Length: 131
Image 1 (cartoon, rainbow, N blue to C red):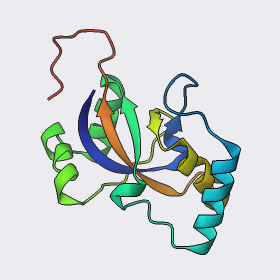
Image 2 (cartoon, helix red, strand yellow):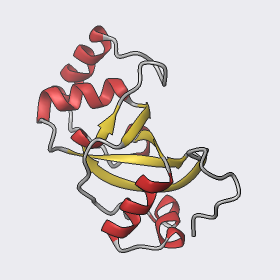
Image 3 (cartoon, rainbow, N blue to C red):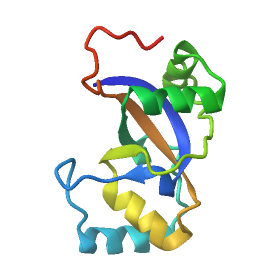
C-alpha cells in the first residue's frame, strides 16, 4: 500500500470489512464517546486521523471530485491542508474503526473526519500507473 494523501470525508464515506483492522469493541467506542463529550474532538490532528484504503477507481473519483492531480494530493501529507470531498461509502477503514463509530454516535454520519488515504492495487494491472 502507498500513502497518496490526506483528505476529509464525511463519516458515512467509510466502508468496513470484518477481516481488515481491529474489530469494533463496544467498550472502547463508549469510552471514546465520553472523551468526545468532555474534550474538543479534533479529527484534523494527526493522532486522530483514520486510515483508509482505496482502489484505483475510487482514487480517480476522489481526484476528479477534488480537481487535483495525484501529485497535488500527495502534498497534503506535508502541507497540513486537507481538502474535503463528499463520497458514498468507498474508503475501506483499516485503522480508526473505534473513533469513527464513537464520532458517528456523537455527531452523526455527516460529520467530517480526516483520513490518511492509502492506494491498494486492485489487481487489474500491477504495471498500471496512477498519475
